[in-house]
Image (cartoon, rainbow, N blue to C red):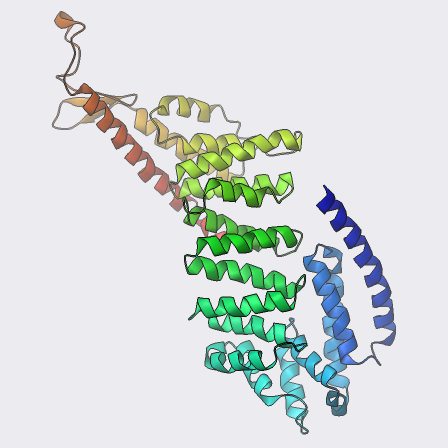
Length: 416
């Protein structure tokens, strides 16, 4: 509660400061130096990732204003190193790469570092791999300068495909040099990806906790949720239930329930039923906290589906049949239909060819094991073994069939 109140107060303060800054920028954007407009842009971008989504329109306005100011300025303005740095920061902050090319072509005095120009031109043109070593040395040289954290972030992006370990070093430098900014927010998300690719679950979890503590109100927080859902399911049971809950506990109840449900759904599709059941149960518990505003149907749906490959499949099928369909999305209705078909097929009596045996409600009956009316109460040797074999068989069937659900919902997996 205190954290949310602190965020609200900070957001209100930022909004007031932005209003004053924008008025000044709009009134003077024809005469302001580029670096002054850049400061406003940086302030707005940092405000966005801290939760002030109203600043998104202002961000676009400032990027456009800075672009026009840079193109209209006399080349001599770049003699001020702050304006030269503003050019580089601008293009690394979502600016138009063509503006860098335009300014570099006019820079006859060498105010812009030609090495940085070359590296950024190739990076923005999709040829970052060609300058991986160059940008690494430049980031060292510019450490502590205004463009240093930006170069470190770019260096991390360039190195990640071939050397995730090196990328993590650059991302860590970015975070240390630019705490609480859009740079740290981006570096944390990318650090989770790099750590996961290295199978370093502990490190990926650490970055996830940092992100959840700092940037849950960022417009890019949905990307973080995607990353953490994949981390939790892919690395089950290595990550562990407790650490999933640790991240969820940093969220407000609505976001936490959504995270649990997404993990439960993907875990079900991937055949990780213990994880699916646990996260569905945690999502269900949050309905009490949300006082009727939560998702009442989905936790039960996922929890029951996760239990289809169990020895109590008849009861599970009956419970699935009682779930109201009106509150489900088309994809969840498809998931419910598929799970019901799986369960019904499992409990349907099936003749086992060549053995004279059939499976009834998860129990196996062989010709030898069926009770003889003339010898009622007799005990059949190996009956327990046969029953266990039948349960194992139908659990395997359940997993295979739920694998088919994955293909039915392949579109959703592709959306993550």
